[in-house]
Amino acid sequence: MKTINRSIGDVFREVGRATQQVTRSFMRALSRMSWPALLASCIMMALLLTILPLALTLFAVFLLLKVAIAIIAGYNVSKRTHEHAPEHKEH
Image (cartoon, rainbow, N blue to C red; front, side, top):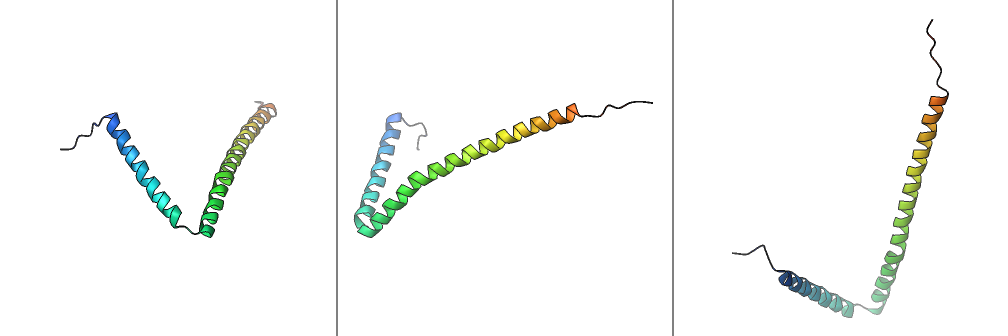
């Protein structure tokens, strides 16, 4: 019967083995790559590491800007409607 409560040492050993396995397979794939394929993969990784964070940061900035403008515009509209609301006179 397997126990689900493992010690922290067992967990770290399992993570270490998985990391070794991934590293070995990565090294095998890297050693089998041709130079042009290696260059193309390095360029793609460089683009992903530089362009993707920039795009996500710009998205977050523009989203926050849109929310801020919507809040300010909503505040101004509600303020304007309260100031210019016609008074109801009863006859």
